[in-house]
Length: 111
Length: 117
Image 1 (cartoon, each protein chain N blue to C red):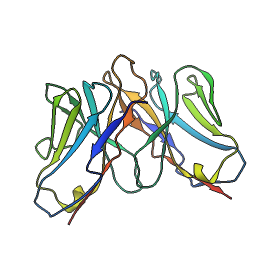
Image 2 (cartoon, rainbow over the protein chains, first blue to last red):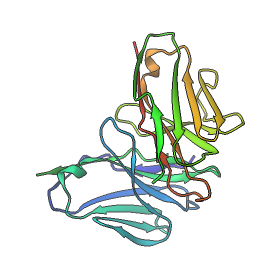
Image 3 (cartoon, rainbow over the protein chains, first blue to last red):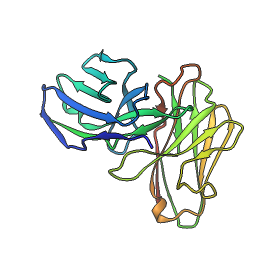
């Protein structure tokens, strides 16, 4: 059974700071990694996908992948109160592509 | 991104009744859809994989006779919770992936909050 581990938090950062969210996964053969944001009572919303080692930047978000360490992270620059949500790390499992989710890290950005 | 629409967004039903949840891919055809369940303060857990024109594949511990999945067309999958009980109260979410994009990002419906009283 593949596993995805995240620190549940809460992670609290001041507005304008960098929020760093971390995730580890158990299956060394995993190839596709995703970060989703979930507001309370809502369904997950895709933030970033990453498939290769290194960094991938999209606006204020940077995803980092290190397959050797089985580690993927998400950096949020210039954090805003509207970024306050639970961030879910997900890895694809199986040939049909279902996702295995971590338990999520709750982020709180204080004004 | 691709649009996946789920209906209803919220439903309250009496114990012992059945509830049907619909999941539609609006701008693409989805041969495979996924059904997840999320309990409060927990992560999403895959319940079953829905395949168009064939039987769904259920995860271990998910009762296939209780959670009926029908994927009769390339744009619609339904989940029916039969003989619902209070412990079935949860947030049910479907997802789908655009065909031809490989194992890339999946898009989620809005979710259905089921409360069984």
